[in-house]
Length: 140
Image: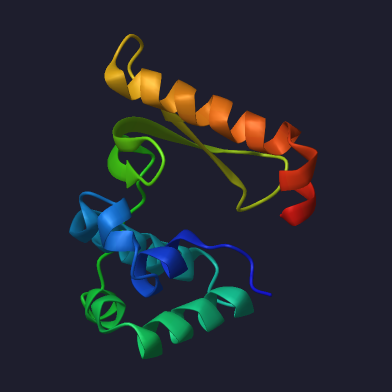
């Protein structure tokens, strides 16, 4: 089984354009970030395999890869449509962790007191309830 990967979701999952409200922007940034990582880690077999998979299975990725755009996005805003809580606008911050080369922690936040914060809180409690339900935990 392959590890979860955002780029794979963005370019290969038919649900991605509905999940990411600004899908084109997310797709552009995802391909540019992979191009950046390719420059940083030119001998990374997993990265080469991922780029090959996306290039052969997604015309949208292949077009973006061919544009040769390079980008690191460390901070910004993402708009998503979550199937449980609906539309969310979240700020994000990517932090490089020094414990392991190439390790990054992404934190997503909603503006306090907003409908986005309420929805994120609802989602957190829903996930917490799913994890504490022994029947759901065994089924997963």
